[in-house]
Image (cartoon, rainbow, N blue to C red; front, side, top):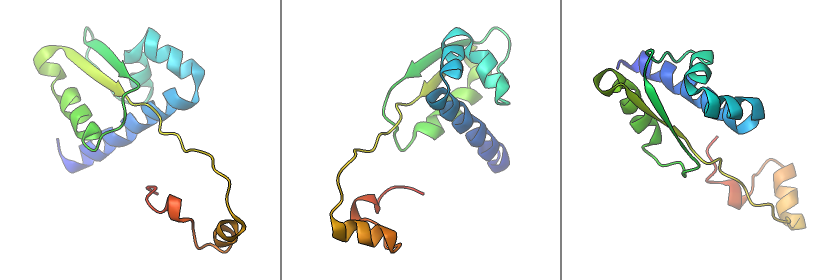
Length: 117
């Protein structure tokens, strides 16, 4: 897969994941007809492809690469293992006045420094 195709697939795949996390109707659609949900987001799956939905696993550094490989391998095996990872949650914590002042001043918060943007 060329870089442009890879970027396009990644954007569409992430849209599918985000839709299932944020919209209960899309989550039901994922369970009822995953091919239709993928098609709705521009990811075509050949008719007759068996789609196994794997849910609620943590995101790993190679998740996107493995999803791309799975999508590319549909033609060989007629099956797709579709990973919908578990959404990462942030723990709510109380901030000290000093931490709140840093956030308001735009300096950030040490606990959020490793959060991807």
